[in-house]
Image (cartoon, rainbow, N blue to C red):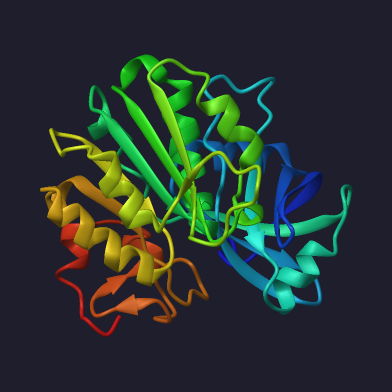
Length: 284
């Protein structure tokens, strides 16, 4: 019987700094069969466990989308993380060519099939954009299947914005609008984006519901005020999707570390609707 906790081996093939303390790694499977098995289960929104030998294991969203047309059967994944602890600092200390462990994909996916033909809005705060990058890539790769797309990327300061270079490529596509914003005081003299907290900037955009699907990811306090703004503009809880974070150990719903009442984030999430969140215990 296969050990579900045994990670696949991945080689780091690319390293890119997004901000002074946020980095993206590109990873390649050493085992081609493991890559094929992974690709059959992979969807936008899922996560994985990443292992640094001697340091431990950490959980990140898979920050890229399944390729529309894989080149030669290659399957590469990316993770974007902030170095804030033992494992993430150890991961940040690795270079291209070094080997780490990975197991996944785990969890559910964004309801991309339900979004077809609809206008979409993606709202990300800080490192929360990492969870949005995969569905953004997915819909941009299939641009003709979706309506107008608005991407709102916010951070505390201009230097904290992730995916700065990619945003310029995203907005080159027809029907895609990218809005960048920083908190008051976080702008620089050359800043040409918006200034204001994400909920306030969202309200200034004055984008009504009209069947639009909204995906919002960020820290809990940001989500709280975003939900208030969405409610103010008439959005229903059913049309808003987010992702949950909780302490995850096994990733497959066995250890009970990530449960919120009967809901297991690793098995039943991490993607949830705002309506689902309203049914969960308030002390989650």
